[in-house]
Image (cartoon, rainbow, N blue to C red; front, side, top):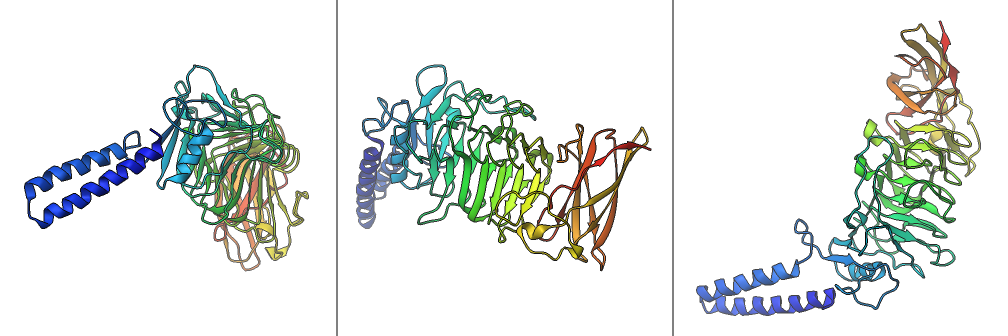
Length: 458
């Protein structure tokens, strides 16, 4: 029987039993009531059969790579399109799992756009037998065995379109779509607290080939507190080889977190597989976080054809770009652009009074980087908003790159009445260049990278 028909039948029987139980209670027949209560409990267990017992949800099992399917979703045939459609028809946080026969990568090739996701659901590619999440601290050794190939879905087709809150997409290879591989966008309701984790987005299943479509990787248009990646090894996405930006967040978004991902590399985290535009594009968004406060939040953002991270739009404020590894991008590592697109280095201004994305936060100036053999003494200064506190993060670039490849550490400084502060830092770095960023502790606004300072022998 069809899952939804099962649910409806169980619901009707449950209501009948409850009415019977209520009649028995009125006639004070407790022995009969206990029997009916047992039946009610049995029916409830049947209703939850196949669901995640911790959440009491329904589970739909995809067992076919076909599209669109026969219209049902049962042990004989259940396609991804059918599973999404059914999940949309029942409330609650459901699960879509995969048990497609065979031991190799199973490719689902939609012939038209899939239905948008309009109810909370977890789509978990790691349930496919043989798949496994990443366990490495660097790179990814994830084995992904379910591929969503959009090359035949049509012009302007998106891959997975999320129009709901509390959706999780994990363990999938998604590539080849013409517009966005994943899009989070609202029509009627909120699109908050969604998680995109442990996927390969834009690459093939091996994580070494890209160029499989014109799409953005992940496009977050609406919602609050959506997360791309996460702080565990298993939540790391590989977002590379896309035909536009790796990740875009903008429009009516607040608090998007981009953490722990590989953006523009192959699965090893060090070989080039750049996205065709920006690595990360933040446009007219509030409070976006790229990276975070611990090593677990570090994104590797490298080899993208344009900038590593671009922050545009005058209403874009509070974009914190912290603790990342940013290198070998075609243009700036971080670009605060008042022109709506990447526009090159922004000059500092006295006391940081100019408006713009991230308040066009002034960047530090590294005045010296002197190596004595045992350690390198780094000295610098910052002129910014008077009497405010800033986090200065320092980075090394072994090849002389003017971005920020390796996080060295940070210092907290407070500017005086003129907006001036100085800092010093010791590191074991002995060659290449060092750079720094400044982040306003109160607003979260992060600057561009400072001009690089070459490490010299004392």
